[in-house]
Image (cartoon, rainbow, N blue to C red; front, side, top):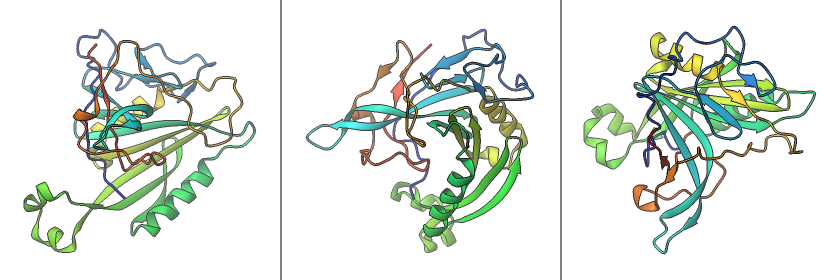
Length: 254
């Protein structure tokens, strides 16, 4: 599996916003359905999900390539995930369709654990503020350009371990997944900020019929400027999006 290395960069700068800091603003429940009365705070509208913003938060949009140039560089793509960055931590968000009467997190969690284990990783079931979680240690390849910066024992084994924390919440006809990476795995302060972001996401399921597990359609915010493939270091392979790989991204300054 690939790591969460950024191949492009997208920022939604909230430093000039008068929005309340997301940290500490969470409700006793959430994430929220669009039909519920969610706490009032500034959010960025990505169509299927509305993501809280505040000081110290950077929001990145992951694109899956839909068109490439003659050299194989992506020149256009569709949004497939939103990542909120705080300090040295990231929270990746995706929303999916789910059955009307049953959730899918238990099944998705087991399948995710199996895929990680087959790839040589380690997993452990856990319980967090949103219920069952999956904690994982994933082997990642070390880029050649930083190989000389890692400890010798890591160079000898040819890979490094990356801890990930998978969150999941079943809502009314939707499922929201979060993947936490970076310092928030260990540092409580950074985790608390991302926890409150996840808690205050609003999911907009819509009325259209969709098969379970289909990704709810994301949309770029008004005014977002899509970057060209020249800004990306590598091509998206066009396969289904996974939380360990990031594609070309967009940039917007608010």
